[in-house]
Length: 309
View 1 (cartoon, rainbow, N blue to C red):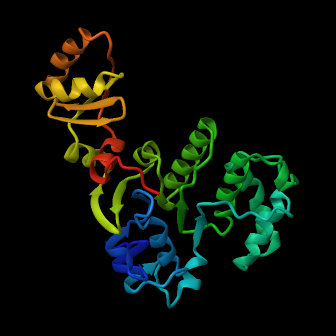
View 2: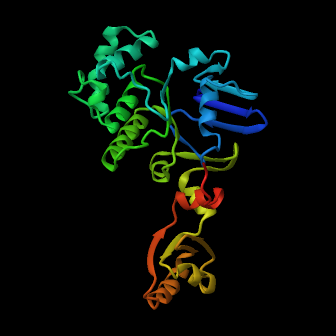
Protein backbone atom coordinates (compact mmCIF):
# COMPACT_ATOMS: atom_id res chain seq x y z
CA UNK A 1 0.00 0.00 0.00
CA UNK A 2 1.41 3.38 -1.01
CA UNK A 3 2.38 5.59 1.91
CA UNK A 4 0.52 8.91 2.03
CA UNK A 5 2.82 11.77 2.95
CA UNK A 6 1.58 14.37 5.46
CA UNK A 7 0.26 17.60 3.94
CA UNK A 8 2.35 19.60 6.44
CA UNK A 9 5.32 18.49 8.52
CA UNK A 10 7.02 20.73 11.09
CA UNK A 11 10.12 19.61 13.00
CA UNK A 12 12.14 21.50 15.61
CA UNK A 13 10.58 24.87 14.74
CA UNK A 14 12.01 27.84 16.65
CA UNK A 15 11.47 31.57 16.26
CA UNK A 16 12.54 34.52 18.41
CA UNK A 17 11.96 38.25 18.20
CA UNK A 18 14.90 39.85 19.95
CA UNK A 19 15.36 38.11 23.30
CA UNK A 20 11.78 36.78 23.30
CA UNK A 21 11.38 33.20 22.11
CA UNK A 22 7.95 32.96 20.44
CA UNK A 23 8.21 29.36 19.20
CA UNK A 24 10.28 26.98 21.29
CA UNK A 25 10.74 23.77 19.31
CA UNK A 26 7.48 22.59 17.72
CA UNK A 27 6.99 19.19 16.11
CA UNK A 28 3.73 18.21 14.42
CA UNK A 29 2.31 16.86 11.17
CA UNK A 30 -1.05 17.04 9.39
CA UNK A 31 -2.51 13.94 7.79
CA UNK A 32 -4.37 14.40 4.54
CA UNK A 33 -8.09 14.94 5.09
CA UNK A 34 -7.96 15.95 8.76
CA UNK A 35 -8.75 19.14 10.63
CA UNK A 36 -5.89 19.98 12.99
CA UNK A 37 -6.46 22.64 15.64
CA UNK A 38 -3.84 24.99 17.01
CA UNK A 39 -5.01 26.45 20.32
CA UNK A 40 -3.44 28.76 22.84
CA UNK A 41 -3.88 32.09 24.66
CA UNK A 42 -2.85 35.37 23.06
CA UNK A 43 0.89 35.41 22.50
CA UNK A 44 1.22 31.61 22.52
CA UNK A 45 2.79 31.58 19.05
CA UNK A 46 -0.12 30.40 16.89
CA UNK A 47 -0.06 33.08 14.18
CA UNK A 48 3.75 33.11 14.09
CA UNK A 49 3.67 29.34 13.52
CA UNK A 50 1.31 29.82 10.57
CA UNK A 51 3.49 32.57 9.12
CA UNK A 52 6.58 30.36 9.35
CA UNK A 53 4.71 27.48 7.70
CA UNK A 54 3.80 29.77 4.80
CA UNK A 55 7.29 31.20 4.49
CA UNK A 56 6.06 34.68 5.44
CA UNK A 57 8.33 34.69 8.50
CA UNK A 58 11.73 33.02 8.53
CA UNK A 59 12.22 30.52 11.34
CA UNK A 60 15.45 30.56 13.34
CA UNK A 61 15.64 26.76 13.27
CA UNK A 62 13.65 23.74 12.16
CA UNK A 63 12.35 22.04 9.04
CA UNK A 64 9.02 22.65 7.30
CA UNK A 65 7.54 20.70 4.41
CA UNK A 66 4.31 22.18 3.08
CA UNK A 67 2.30 20.28 0.42
CA UNK A 68 5.48 18.52 -0.66
CA UNK A 69 7.63 21.67 -0.85
CA UNK A 70 10.43 22.74 1.46
CA UNK A 71 9.81 26.03 3.23
CA UNK A 72 11.20 28.67 3.04
CA UNK A 73 13.22 27.63 -0.05
CA UNK A 74 10.13 26.81 -2.11
CA UNK A 75 7.55 28.70 -0.08
CA UNK A 76 6.10 30.48 -3.11
CA UNK A 77 5.50 27.19 -4.92
CA UNK A 78 3.92 25.77 -1.76
CA UNK A 79 1.58 28.74 -1.31
CA UNK A 80 0.17 28.11 -4.79
CA UNK A 81 -1.43 24.96 -3.37
CA UNK A 82 -2.68 26.51 -0.12
CA UNK A 83 -5.72 28.61 0.76
CA UNK A 84 -5.47 31.12 3.62
CA UNK A 85 -8.11 32.88 5.68
CA UNK A 86 -6.17 35.53 7.66
CA UNK A 87 -7.14 36.69 11.12
CA UNK A 88 -8.33 40.02 9.71
CA UNK A 89 -10.09 40.41 6.37
CA UNK A 90 -8.02 42.05 3.63
CA UNK A 91 -10.55 42.24 0.81
CA UNK A 92 -10.27 45.07 -1.71
CA UNK A 93 -13.04 47.61 -0.95
CA UNK A 94 -12.86 49.06 -4.48
CA UNK A 95 -13.91 45.79 -6.13
CA UNK A 96 -17.21 43.98 -6.24
CA UNK A 97 -17.64 40.52 -4.72
CA UNK A 98 -16.93 38.78 -8.05
CA UNK A 99 -14.01 41.08 -8.83
CA UNK A 100 -12.36 40.23 -5.51
CA UNK A 101 -12.44 36.56 -6.49
CA UNK A 102 -11.38 37.22 -10.08
CA UNK A 103 -8.34 39.31 -9.15
CA UNK A 104 -7.30 36.86 -6.46
CA UNK A 105 -7.39 34.04 -9.00
CA UNK A 106 -4.85 35.93 -11.12
CA UNK A 107 -2.34 35.76 -8.25
CA UNK A 108 -2.34 31.99 -8.77
CA UNK A 109 -2.06 32.23 -12.53
CA UNK A 110 -5.65 31.05 -13.00
CA UNK A 111 -7.33 32.25 -16.17
CA UNK A 112 -10.23 34.66 -15.79
CA UNK A 113 -12.46 32.20 -17.65
CA UNK A 114 -11.72 29.42 -15.13
CA UNK A 115 -12.19 31.70 -12.14
CA UNK A 116 -15.51 32.96 -13.53
CA UNK A 117 -16.66 29.37 -13.93
CA UNK A 118 -15.87 28.74 -10.24
CA UNK A 119 -17.51 31.89 -8.85
CA UNK A 120 -21.14 30.62 -8.66
CA UNK A 121 -20.13 27.54 -6.64
CA UNK A 122 -17.84 29.59 -4.40
CA UNK A 123 -20.58 32.11 -3.64
CA UNK A 124 -23.09 29.33 -2.98
CA UNK A 125 -20.59 27.76 -0.61
CA UNK A 126 -20.25 31.06 1.28
CA UNK A 127 -24.00 31.77 1.34
CA UNK A 128 -23.49 34.75 -0.99
CA UNK A 129 -25.38 33.64 -4.10
CA UNK A 130 -26.75 36.65 -5.97
CA UNK A 131 -24.13 38.99 -4.49
CA UNK A 132 -21.73 38.84 -7.47
CA UNK A 133 -22.03 42.55 -8.24
CA UNK A 134 -22.39 43.81 -4.67
CA UNK A 135 -19.80 46.36 -3.57
CA UNK A 136 -17.79 45.61 -0.43
CA UNK A 137 -19.10 48.59 1.62
CA UNK A 138 -22.66 47.22 1.27
CA UNK A 139 -21.76 43.86 2.86
CA UNK A 140 -22.07 43.07 6.56
CA UNK A 141 -19.03 41.99 8.52
CA UNK A 142 -20.24 38.40 8.43
CA UNK A 143 -20.64 38.50 4.65
CA UNK A 144 -17.10 39.82 4.24
CA UNK A 145 -15.76 37.05 6.46
CA UNK A 146 -17.56 34.43 4.38
CA UNK A 147 -16.27 36.03 1.18
CA UNK A 148 -12.74 35.73 2.57
CA UNK A 149 -13.37 32.01 3.06
CA UNK A 150 -14.67 31.69 -0.53
CA UNK A 151 -11.61 33.57 -1.80
CA UNK A 152 -9.33 31.06 -0.04
CA UNK A 153 -10.87 28.33 -2.22
CA UNK A 154 -10.33 30.05 -5.57
CA UNK A 155 -7.23 27.94 -6.32
CA UNK A 156 -8.84 24.65 -5.18
CA UNK A 157 -6.14 24.26 -2.48
CA UNK A 158 -4.83 21.04 -0.98
CA UNK A 159 -4.61 22.68 2.44
CA UNK A 160 -6.61 25.46 4.10
CA UNK A 161 -4.97 27.57 6.82
CA UNK A 162 -7.68 29.30 8.83
CA UNK A 163 -6.63 31.89 11.42
CA UNK A 164 -9.67 32.41 13.69
CA UNK A 165 -12.11 32.08 10.75
CA UNK A 166 -15.36 32.80 12.66
CA UNK A 167 -14.19 35.85 14.61
CA UNK A 168 -16.99 38.43 14.71
CA UNK A 169 -19.67 36.18 13.23
CA UNK A 170 -23.14 35.89 14.74
CA UNK A 171 -24.31 32.40 15.82
CA UNK A 172 -26.19 31.71 12.58
CA UNK A 173 -23.22 32.60 10.38
CA UNK A 174 -20.82 30.71 12.63
CA UNK A 175 -22.87 27.52 12.38
CA UNK A 176 -23.09 27.94 8.60
CA UNK A 177 -19.30 28.23 8.34
CA UNK A 178 -18.87 25.13 10.50
CA UNK A 179 -21.21 23.19 8.21
CA UNK A 180 -19.27 24.38 5.14
CA UNK A 181 -15.92 23.42 6.69
CA UNK A 182 -17.27 19.96 7.51
CA UNK A 183 -18.30 19.69 3.85
CA UNK A 184 -14.74 20.48 2.77
CA UNK A 185 -13.38 17.81 5.11
CA UNK A 186 -15.82 15.25 3.69
CA UNK A 187 -14.47 16.13 0.24
CA UNK A 188 -10.92 15.32 1.36
CA UNK A 189 -9.57 18.80 2.08
CA UNK A 190 -7.08 19.29 4.92
CA UNK A 191 -7.53 22.14 7.41
CA UNK A 192 -5.17 23.77 9.88
CA UNK A 193 -7.27 25.89 12.21
CA UNK A 194 -6.41 28.39 14.93
CA UNK A 195 -9.30 29.50 17.08
CA UNK A 196 -10.22 30.91 20.47
CA UNK A 197 -13.60 29.14 20.24
CA UNK A 198 -13.31 25.89 22.16
CA UNK A 199 -16.73 24.87 20.87
CA UNK A 200 -15.46 25.34 17.31
CA UNK A 201 -12.34 23.29 17.98
CA UNK A 202 -14.29 20.49 19.65
CA UNK A 203 -16.80 20.33 16.78
CA UNK A 204 -14.37 20.47 13.85
CA UNK A 205 -10.96 19.16 14.85
CA UNK A 206 -9.82 15.57 14.64
CA UNK A 207 -6.70 16.46 16.63
CA UNK A 208 -5.57 19.46 18.67
CA UNK A 209 -2.32 20.96 19.85
CA UNK A 210 -2.41 23.42 22.75
CA UNK A 211 0.45 25.93 22.87
CA UNK A 212 1.56 28.19 25.67
CA UNK A 213 4.61 30.46 25.42
CA UNK A 214 5.61 28.75 22.20
CA UNK A 215 5.66 25.25 23.67
CA UNK A 216 3.34 22.27 23.22
CA UNK A 217 1.60 21.55 26.53
CA UNK A 218 -0.94 18.98 25.26
CA UNK A 219 -2.04 17.34 22.03
CA UNK A 220 -4.46 14.67 20.86
CA UNK A 221 -8.12 14.20 19.84
CA UNK A 222 -10.52 16.53 21.73
CA UNK A 223 -12.38 13.81 23.64
CA UNK A 224 -9.13 12.13 24.65
CA UNK A 225 -7.73 15.42 25.97
CA UNK A 226 -10.88 15.99 28.02
CA UNK A 227 -10.78 12.47 29.46
CA UNK A 228 -7.07 12.75 30.26
CA UNK A 229 -7.08 16.13 31.97
CA UNK A 230 -10.54 16.81 33.47
CA UNK A 231 -13.01 15.03 35.75
CA UNK A 232 -16.11 14.02 33.78
CA UNK A 233 -18.63 16.37 35.45
CA UNK A 234 -18.50 20.09 36.25
CA UNK A 235 -20.88 21.82 38.64
CA UNK A 236 -20.72 25.59 38.39
CA UNK A 237 -21.84 27.44 41.52
CA UNK A 238 -22.81 31.10 41.15
CA UNK A 239 -23.52 33.95 43.55
CA UNK A 240 -21.93 36.50 45.87
CA UNK A 241 -21.46 33.79 48.50
CA UNK A 242 -19.98 31.23 46.08
CA UNK A 243 -16.30 32.02 46.80
CA UNK A 244 -16.81 31.80 50.56
CA UNK A 245 -18.83 28.58 50.19
CA UNK A 246 -16.12 27.10 47.95
CA UNK A 247 -13.41 27.91 50.48
CA UNK A 248 -15.35 26.38 53.36
CA UNK A 249 -17.25 23.40 51.91
CA UNK A 250 -16.48 22.60 48.24
CA UNK A 251 -13.52 20.43 49.18
CA UNK A 252 -15.88 18.10 51.06
CA UNK A 253 -17.52 17.11 47.77
CA UNK A 254 -15.33 17.98 44.77
CA UNK A 255 -11.98 16.59 43.71
CA UNK A 256 -10.87 19.97 42.39
CA UNK A 257 -12.30 23.49 42.72
CA UNK A 258 -11.45 26.68 40.83
CA UNK A 259 -12.91 30.07 41.70
CA UNK A 260 -13.22 32.87 39.16
CA UNK A 261 -15.07 36.00 40.25
CA UNK A 262 -18.40 34.92 41.75
CA UNK A 263 -18.29 31.44 40.21
CA UNK A 264 -16.88 28.26 41.72
CA UNK A 265 -16.13 25.44 39.28
CA UNK A 266 -16.41 22.07 41.02
CA UNK A 267 -14.88 19.14 39.13
CA UNK A 268 -16.31 15.78 40.19
CA UNK A 269 -16.59 12.13 39.16
CA UNK A 270 -20.03 10.96 38.01
CA UNK A 271 -20.90 9.37 41.38
CA UNK A 272 -19.78 12.48 43.27
CA UNK A 273 -22.22 14.83 41.56
CA UNK A 274 -25.47 13.79 43.37
CA UNK A 275 -24.20 14.44 46.94
CA UNK A 276 -22.86 17.85 45.92
CA UNK A 277 -26.11 18.78 44.17
CA UNK A 278 -28.14 17.63 47.18
CA UNK A 279 -26.02 19.83 49.44
CA UNK A 280 -26.35 22.82 47.10
CA UNK A 281 -30.13 22.40 46.95
CA UNK A 282 -30.17 23.49 50.61
CA UNK A 283 -28.24 26.66 49.80
CA UNK A 284 -30.93 28.86 48.29
CA UNK A 285 -28.56 31.80 47.88
CA UNK A 286 -26.45 29.83 45.39
CA UNK A 287 -27.32 28.97 41.78
CA UNK A 288 -25.94 25.89 40.06
CA UNK A 289 -25.33 24.49 36.59
CA UNK A 290 -24.32 20.88 36.01
CA UNK A 291 -22.64 19.96 32.70
CA UNK A 292 -20.15 17.50 31.19
CA UNK A 293 -16.53 18.61 31.11
CA UNK A 294 -15.50 20.24 27.85
CA UNK A 295 -12.45 21.47 25.97
CA UNK A 296 -12.63 24.92 27.57
CA UNK A 297 -12.08 23.29 30.96
CA UNK A 298 -8.95 21.61 29.61
CA UNK A 299 -7.70 24.86 28.08
CA UNK A 300 -8.20 26.85 31.28
CA UNK A 301 -6.65 24.17 33.48
CA UNK A 302 -3.53 23.99 31.31
CA UNK A 303 -3.09 27.69 30.50
CA UNK A 304 -4.70 29.36 33.51
CA UNK A 305 -7.58 31.75 33.94
CA UNK A 306 -5.46 34.91 34.00
CA UNK A 307 -6.20 37.45 31.27
CA UNK A 308 -3.64 37.50 28.43
CA UNK A 309 -3.04 40.62 26.30
